[in-house]
Image (cartoon, rainbow, N blue to C red):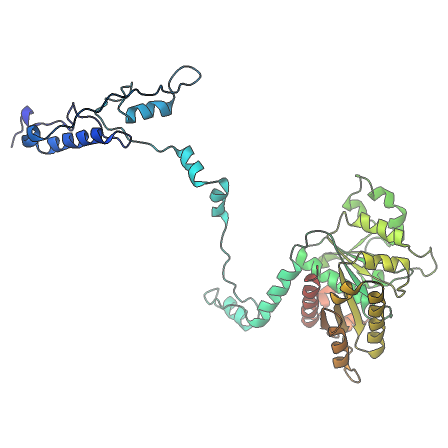
Length: 415
């Protein structure tokens, strides 16, 4: 069927105004009538036309600095049916949203865009034990959740790795020799160093001769705390660097901590003072986040008292013997009598087990220190630690490493 020119109808009536959400209802009604006329031309004459809207003065369009109307003003004039240099008024003009206004209304910020980087954590998968072996042998096809022992280890590691919010000091005490203070200092420093990635210092604050440097791994030098004290002015100004400090501390390799040894001569020099301890602590605190302090056997020594005053977490060590435990108990009496009751209540007690438990009244020791301190934990017997030789950290048994991780987590809870 052929169409003639008379059969072709325009899409819109030329005399019909454009519909717009900003136009008055009368204008939109006229637009609807025009659309009906396009759809049904035969009834166009019977469609009542809406009366023309009353003429209202339009506000002056805002202008830019160069005198031309702004884009938003031109768009608004087109939507309101005002003649402009744009398309004819009878053609509908799309209304574009004001994106800047939308952002301001709903409060979108750059953080919303950056939040796409947040990846939800994957469900934990067993890595050790039978569950971990099954996961490895199946090439990842079988993914079982960790067992209770592995979950406890993961929680301990997370506790040790927590952010302490600044410099923290752990002080290990017991006035009796052979109570396991030096071993505890090295094992705690190793635990925190390995799981936190360094910035840990083990410091022998013995008033005369200490053994921390003897039990630690040796380095290229034999300098001690007295050498650092003599050259302390170099580290007080802005020129002091951690690279320079390596001439005075002994790196422990894969254990990821350093050792500041005490004077290993029983006759050289005078006893350290409280002022000396404060000056040394101020210097090393610029380079380390965690300091584990070994102490001597004289609770009345000035540097012993200064270390206690700077303590954030107290660790009381003892062997599972009555004399070692009684000495530790009397030391706690001294601390409580000198106004340090809160420090005692928050302390962690560590009981080092002997090779044989014969004639050891372990329950009595546990009951007494559980009533006075925050936690009591056992350190299993380790021949390597009991030998008196420098500790080879990679040769420690799994039982010792796991026990000291639990002790480290208990200590970290108080930091």
